[in-house]
Amino acid sequence: QVQLVESGGGVVQPGRSLRLSCAASGFTFSNYGMQWVRQAPGTGLEWVAVISYDGSNKYSADSVKGRFTISRDNSKNTLFLQMNSLRAEDTAVYYCAKVPYSSALHAFDIWGQGTMVTVS
Amino acid sequence: QTVVTQEPSLSVSPGGTVTLTCGLSSDSVSTTFYPSWYQQTPGQTPRTLIYNTNTRSSGVPDRFSGSILGNKAALTITGAQADDESDYYCVLYMGSGISVFGGGTKLTVL
Image (cartoon, rainbow over all chains, first blue to last red; front, side, top):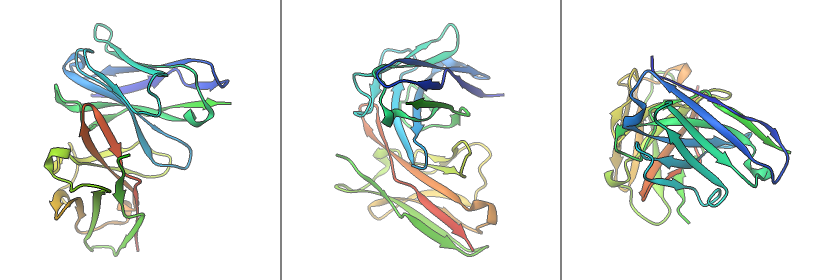
């Protein structure tokens, strides 16, 4: 069964850091790009960052560039999002998602259940 | 700044057909943007419906279909059911790793 499970969310003060994790199972993690998407309370979905299957390519939205870093550990089937200099506007549910195609960087087919981050 | 446009709200009668669209503020949408579509009911995790313009995700019924209509991407729902009442989001891939979500369409089935 293909599954993504996020963890690491919580309440954090502005300016502090937090690291989210996403544990993958049920598929060959090292073959697929992975993404982070967030959703602030009462608003729509926002793309945050993507990492290629081997970690060699990483891209992020302008709203988090320079503050958030996406990474992965293929030996542990885990995706990460290091969030620094957090702001109130980063408050959101953070979802990790799998890219459908090997070697691609677009779209999402499997989603985690999300982890809530509150900056206050 | 790239803006992906969607209808804020639409309604459809049970059993009817509705088309949601996904456009760009300053360009035409084509398959090269790899449009994808997601369904989300309040408080729930998004569900993938369509990616790569018209590829249905696993388990998605064939009454959901994706296409390019004119200069926009489109999601058509045929034989609408009550549980299709949800928010629908499109995503366009801008290249260089960058994806952009539309603002979402709230679909009402009544």
